[in-house]
Image 1 (cartoon, rainbow, N blue to C red):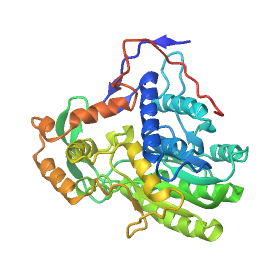
Image 2 (cartoon, rainbow, N blue to C red):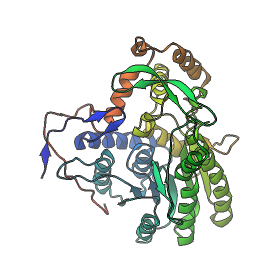
Image 3 (cartoon, helix red, strand yellow):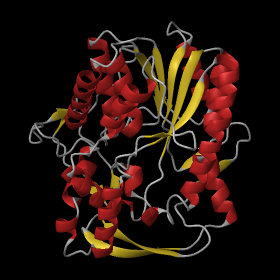
Length: 403
């Protein structure tokens, strides 16, 4: 056993350690939310869900909703750091340990594969697991995010960038260390950087996964594939929707439309993009303007009783759009819109007004930056209610494969 008292080591949007007890508490809370919200929404229907990017954020929430809200067996793929003598594991590793323990207690089968989900090796391993008694997959949730990707066909590696397209961009953001509103400036991306970002974050890997699953015959008739995306407000578009990330998301959405037609023709299935709400993640914290926007957004949504965490969004997805007998409500672009509460006119009007007013001096009054900072630390198991951080905890937790 490796018992330690763990204190957070964080700098800006980077965290180098995690607290296993806090991560476990976070997962247990999400499990209870899924059970409560979905228990009366059609009953457990069993089957299998595959979650790509299953250890944190929307991927973890989707896995929890499928397993504990719908009684499904699950396979999750992700890339997380296991514990070592010198470091704790990453938060996603501890999240998955907690998920597996809960799945075993509930009599649900769960397998997890840790490695580069962009690689053919991992997709082959996932398919082998699926053929080992799981049965066909009803749902595939695609929630992969990484700064780099190596194309398994060509062997070429690509690196994504967070840049505007067509001109220099100056905007407000928050210095997460100092809690100050600052101006930041970004030079435009080159054509090569745009192409590389699309290669990492666009639809090529989603297409590869869907074709691999189809070719292996492991998708159930009428299977549904969901890929997560984001649009956001105009105030963030230059660095997001109109920038390199947005170009990649457009490619993802076009790929999903083509895959939807392919799945309909082959197995009567579907592929949809779900545009989700802005939430606090390590990835979103690194995007200029987004921490300030989320801080302003959370205050407005909390005041109206509209605030949701990823697990609430995953529950809404299953309850309103994906459960047996449900036909998803789609926008004009064929997308599921779980960002509908975020994008309400009254919410966005207030956020836009406060954006123009926000300064370091009034940040605490106009926004919920305190809540943002707490949510960010909670991602890594810190500042979780009910956890005694003065007590030593076991850091060398291992994922119980085959729960």
